[in-house]
Length: 210
Image (cartoon, rainbow, N blue to C red):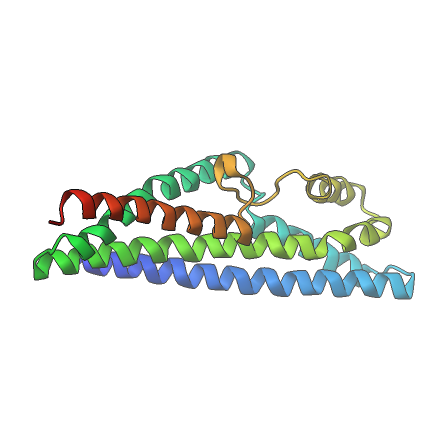
């Protein structure tokens, strides 16, 4: 019962945090695009614009995970290992549920762990893909805001973060060696899941089903 409560709490926290993360980053990117358009139209730069740009910049760093530079790569490798090791286990659980004829208690346990793993994997991954999509959308607006930055320290920090992104370097979480977490990457992982499921299911049917 305690394990069930902990697992449900983990799912709720992961889901809520991922959805909140996506909404925050989406709103932030809209503000960034709107501010860049206003700067281009007005052709002037006020203290209010400076504060807005500074706030958006620091929020972009926080939400993209760039602020934890060293740990970001460790977490990216950890997510890659979690996905690569979790997919075969999840496939085996599903095949056991379909072809293994488990008892009622075993069936509930296997189903629970399968669903829990899927939810914990899907929501954070989709959140990372959405962050990357938002960064792509603001790429064309980044050069428009650079001439209006007067604070030298902020300009250096601004260039350090956004220029990495402009020149193709990762500034968000990644799937380890696979690269940035994008929707196309998630589709590729889903295709890999289906392929592994097909292989394991055919193995079960040949060896365990008479």
